[in-house]
Image 1 (cartoon, one colour):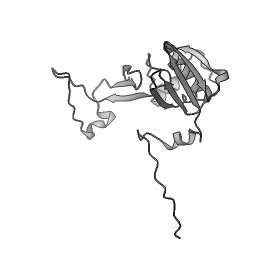
Image 2 (cartoon, rainbow, N blue to C red):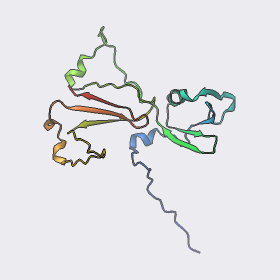
Image 3 (cartoon, helix red, strand yellow):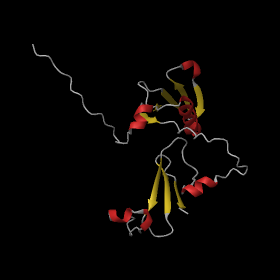
Image 4 (cartoon, rainbow, N blue to C red):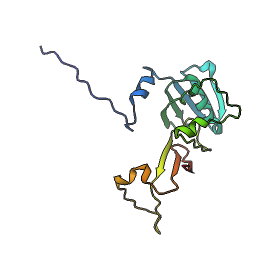
Length: 186
């Protein structure tokens, strides 16, 4: 009788965006938040605990989920069960922890050290709580044709930030909300 050896396969994800740091933060068993849809309301349970079920309006779904995932503090599987049997699922990461800053003597709340170090703060609004935000540098502008299409060729040599035309712009784009914010990098 021959013994069989178990072959290991490299793990992969559909998006290929796993990083070593994120893999360490994922617990062996993910917490599970389930939202069962009933017309305009949702019944939300965490880890199957019906005793702590919460009924919320559909409009409050993302705010509630962001608060729950943040409170859990680890990657969490979120499922939405629609009345017709359709199930939508995703794994959401909690927001990164706020950086600890030693006692600042600044009374006006501004951080002059960020300007000295070359850091620039950009802000955007109307994103879905907890969603991933893309941050992109604008290297060129293009126009759409009469059919609403565009074609852009990128020379990898153009990707040097010191060679970009002034003013440099940054795009913040929400993957879920599709919210787009464009800010100058000054």
